[in-house]
Structures are given as C-alpha cells and as structure tokens.
Image 1 (tube, rainbow, N blue to C red):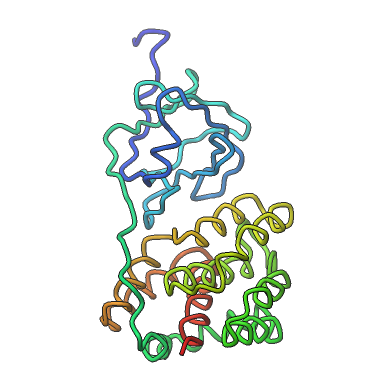
Image 2: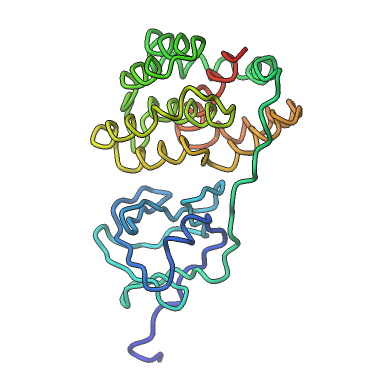
Length: 270
C-alpha cells in the first residue's frame, strides 16, 4: 500500500508551447475554466492555455496522451515542474519539448498568384466557409482588402465577429486568418487598427476566441498555419497545399475559417 499522502502517477506533457511554458512557471496558479471531449482549458494570470490529446502544436497548447480529469473551477499550482492541487492527478511539465513558430521570410512579390494556386484544390471547402459567413459579409472584407482600407476592414470585421457557434465561432476563425495574413504580408495600413478592434471585441466573443484573435493579429497561430505560410512564401506551393490539408483538420470549422481568411488577404494583394 502506498503512502496515504502520495499522489497518482499523473500525466506527462509531451509538447508545450513556448507561451504556455512561460505562463506555467514555478509558483504559478491555474484555474480550470472549461473542458470538451478532447481538451481542458485553464486560465493562468488572465491568459488562456489548454491541455489536449495529441494535436498540432500552438503557443498556448500542452499536448499529452489525454487531458487530466479535472473539474471546472479546480485551482492548481505549479510545483516542481508539475501542475497539481494535491488531490487530483498531476500534470508533469518537465520533460516536454518546447514548440515555437519559425520565423517567416518577407512576402514574395507574386504572393497573389501563389495564393490562387494554393486555393484551387480547396474551392469546395472555401465556398462552404463563405456560405456560413454570408456572402455580403465576406464581400465587404474583400472590398476593404483590395482598397487597403484599414478603417473599412475594421468595420467589416465587426459584422463577422461572433458569427457561428462554439468556443471559436467561424466568423472569428475567418478574421483570425485575415489578421494573421495581413501581418505575414507586412501590410502597413492595418496594424494601427488592431488595438481598438480587439478592445471592442473583448466583451463580444468567447474568451478563448478573443485570445486566439489577439494571437493571430500578432502572427501566432497553430503549427500548420505557420508551415503553410512558410512553404507558400518560399515557393513550395505543393507543400503549402499539404499543410492546408492539416489546417483543415483543426476543429469542425476552425481550420476552414483560418484558410479562408488567409487566402482572402493574399489573393487580394497586388
């Protein structure tokens, strides 16, 4: 019989995003705020991270064989490179590989041509996403992108925020793709609009979705989105298409929304 104060063996994190590692430093406190069948979401110092079964890396993600069976509202602390409360199974952080996104090169001068080539195999998925968003809403975003109109894009984005169900609505996924693509393409007319838009959006979309929108506006997304962008910018269109397939596998509509958003931007640039 084990010692009455001994803890269960626990779960080992295999991969941890660099931002999650930074937040979950020794002595940090985390609170379980939500869970789904595949992931458990934690609030740490006002920021969101999640623990999930093996999936694609993200700066906020902790990937393990499975998420812990922790109830909502549970308060945990980081002690000795483990996240624990003394009663439930601990989550071990110490042996995890740390993931950071690769740096992206400057956008190529023929980015629009490459984006059109990337999009061709995915026309049905993109059309489905556009229908879910509403043709008029998407058209307003595309018009602002073609004009390089920052205030116009912010106005069009307000009509898409929160469009669709879930922790990350389809409209937010699409906007996240737009914001990521604008930053990757180094469009000078957009960054000044971001702080005001994110402040407006904070109370109008789920907490997790707002955190991901903020990340994407700063160039932080899931691993397939970074890999797709790197491949496209370096001329490996076929590799970019393969990574787009990975992206489409994220969530019920998250990957499709992200892909539709980045292609809306890159296809509009001249």
